[in-house]
Length: 417
Image (cartoon, rainbow, N blue to C red):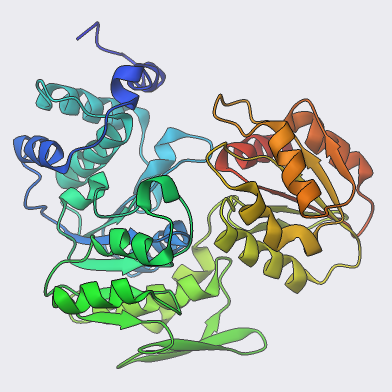
């Protein structure tokens, strides 16, 4: 090992070397290191959250409600928007640099000769930090898939699968049925699970039956009703009414409340703290709407399921002006599939390549929009220019929407702020 990094920035730069990036995670190796660290079995109650979209929203709402009730909560999410520290939270607060550096040092020494990647480092660091704090509950967000994801080294006491859509097909499979099977891998025999997808693939249902997982499905076992300014939730045993409309997706809020119902005997929550948690819970750049003379919407939507929801959200905003999109994405994404749901919602497009080496080529992005018969497409040298020109073009009651990739939205979000 070279000289040990002394700051978080130095650690992150060190972990970004090819040695730590291009290593396929192996759950057996991760398990060996977790054992070396004394993390197995894990000392806290664990909720593991998988899904194509909505994972972060569910984590945020569960974290906010359970924290409001007074439970000690740790949460691990990815990726981060602006700061690495966002990935690990205690009581909703980002972890500090010193604690992260201490965790990385511990993981580096514990791994021995094992080769692990950047994300495995992050996962083990989060678990080590949580184990030191003797928390009541820990909420772990899956990075990609579920079955082979590093967080799956921990046996979940309760599993959540928010939604199943087409994303990361090269890794997870090219159909919803294949992808659902990968996500189902976080479930454990005899342990409860919640599925927020309103039309779960048969492979998920079959997996639950084969492994004797008591699973609860959106619309079948729980559902919700929207009123004028509030909403009501109906579960198997509980009904919560006159709840405030959350800033995050309502379907994910409904899924979160089913989780809370299943926790009732061990971690009960009351109506007042559900209200408080729903009011507090939010995530930057997840369908984030910023009001003003020109409305701005920042959303990390990077697959067709997410852009479909984004298009629906824009319709619900009911503004009278035009919609101006600022977009870029990774080369691994299918631009036709991702942009199609937005075509009828956008009046003009401002596109550019990402600064990252794995950005989609601008010619490919342009061709996709041309194929979809998009109008008023302008190519820019970078996203900063795209956003600046979009801002100059926008008039009162127009809406600028930024989406396509977390990298794109992170850059544009910082320009706005």
